Picture 1 (cartoon, one colour):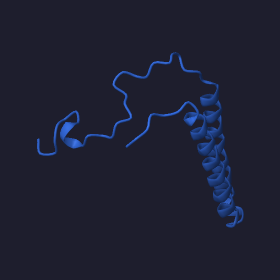
Picture 2 (cartoon, one colour):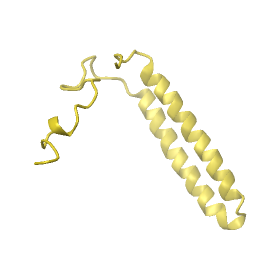
Picture 3 (tube, helix red, strand yellow):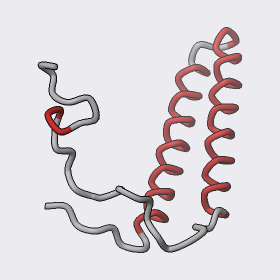
Picture 4 (cartoon, one colour):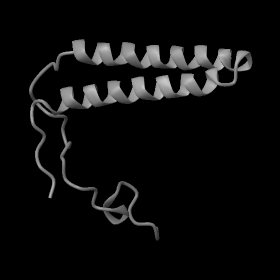
Length: 92
């Protein structure tokens, strides 16, 4: 059974996302640096990727919800499966 989200879950998710981005970037840069000079363009690409994600995380932190109302139809119930989806079952 899924629980309703708590108020601090979005912030915890951002912290986890930021840790994931930073850890991946550091490990990827270490890998490409081990290649020496041929890996340097990839190191720069990984750093650009990480900076893009860090900017997005900062934007998410600064964004405030416009209201306390959830999106219409948004629930935390499990997906009912293909039989109840928009297009019907798999056999149609």
